[in-house]
Image 1 (cartoon, rainbow, N blue to C red):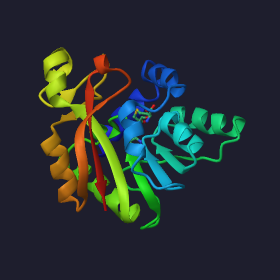
Image 2 (cartoon, rainbow, N blue to C red; image 1 turned 120 degrees about the vertical axis):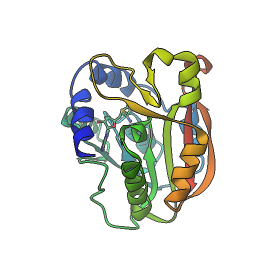
Image 3 (cartoon, rainbow, N blue to C red; image 1 turned 120 degrees about the horizontal axis):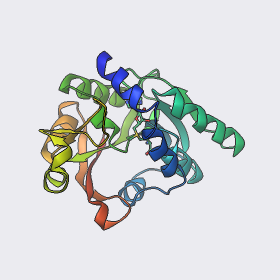
Image 4 (cartoon, rainbow, N blue to C red; image 1 turned 60 degrees about the horizontal axis):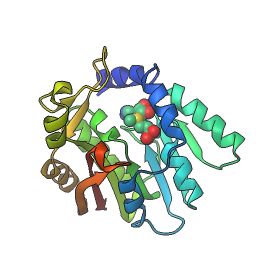
Length: 219
Ligand SMILES: C[S@@+](CC[C@H](N)C(=O)[O-])C[C@H]1O[C@@H](n2cnc3c(N)ncnc32)[C@H](O)[C@@H]1O
């Protein structure tokens, strides 16, 4: 994991990734994310892994949830903290690596790893490790929701950016997203002890954007 952390951190410390994220900050939750939120109990305490500049964190806070949000890039966490302060939203933003979570066991009602952040954990052992960490910090029966790029969709539409299962949407970087099939996502969730509630393609903002895969599971 150690070498890829530096690659990912570098991408999220520079334009154009920061610009993309800034543009997303004012956006609403995605269509599939809104559907997933219907599984969350009122006033759930949510851990948001790979929060970026806080798109999901701010939306979910405004829906009445308690939020702790983490990211490895100072360049995204600092503006998110600042905006929380200015807008008087009581959200805890922390600069930390999401691989080893700095939280007590059985703490959160929900963990989200959205915007395909899961695909930035390279190598199977790291994916297993982070899912086990999510399970550890979740309360019994807690919910994990994670998403990934849809390999079949990318193969059909964006094969020029795909190298096997590695998706390279940004030029001049070694940073890629691992793309998944639904069976692979289900397998990873089950291997780490989760019960899968649903794993399916979800609409992002518009049908034309194409689907992403997401998995909702319970500890
Ligand atoms: C695609 S962006 C999504 C940002 C945000 N969720 C949004 O929708 O605007 C992925 C984020 O995950 C963060 N990230 C990647 N690997 C991480 C890790 N190991 N621990 C914590 N954050 C990580 C990146 O720094 C980046 O901000």
